[in-house]
Image (cartoon, rainbow, N blue to C red; front, side, top):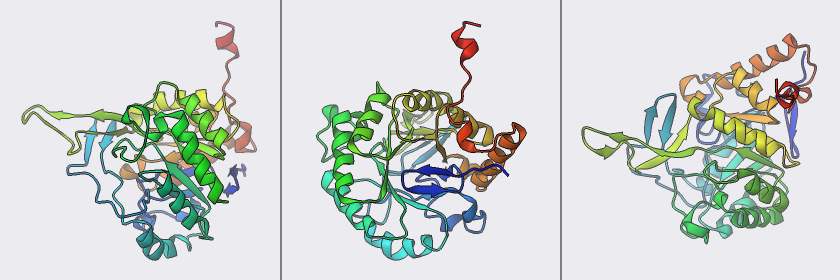
Length: 316
């Protein structure tokens, strides 16, 4: 059998397929539909220090080859998560990575400090790139996201790095001029990996009522429509940093996942596909294994970043 195991910092995954934050709930929602032990890692819905009610309805709108969402990081806060959600997650037997977000560095620091003490949490993903929340509390130029500013990205990662021994993954935004610059800032601050990309900022309008389709007006676009751009960003970043890149964006099947790995991703996250096919992650794992067997490749690492550019370089 092909060896599918990969490492993200100190986390050893049985395969490179992870669930994307916000698309898999807290895993329990999928327990009757999916063998959770077959997934490489489960990334929880983003947790904040205090409960958040999220954005006004409606929050989701289907678009051609994609989906707009403006959930607004609705969650019950860290206390409820540790008391109600973590006992179940700790029994699954699959690495658990907690996604966190805050209104300022202090909140990220407090969240990381508390999660650092939880034995059954393998890593922390810093969600500094959600396009559906206001940047209150941040001194980011232009009032943008933390992930749109290399200095702010560095400061957040550096603060969290000081307080936790957990593997840190920094989730980046595609809504930037140069994503490589942001990825380098995260790496320089001590992030053990970067995940990219989060959703693209978009909107939709009901022409009959002349109103936005989303209560928040704007939302994050995900799904197959963003894959070519996400793939290009993963390719660019993987060539310019020395830490693992986790690819996200329109991964609906194993062929999509293999594309990201060939472009340089060490692992992938599956998001929108979970809404369409709850068993998508497990099917993608099986498909990757079949691909390796078909091409007589023994280890998944042997195809990472192995995109053949020779003919392109020669102009053929």
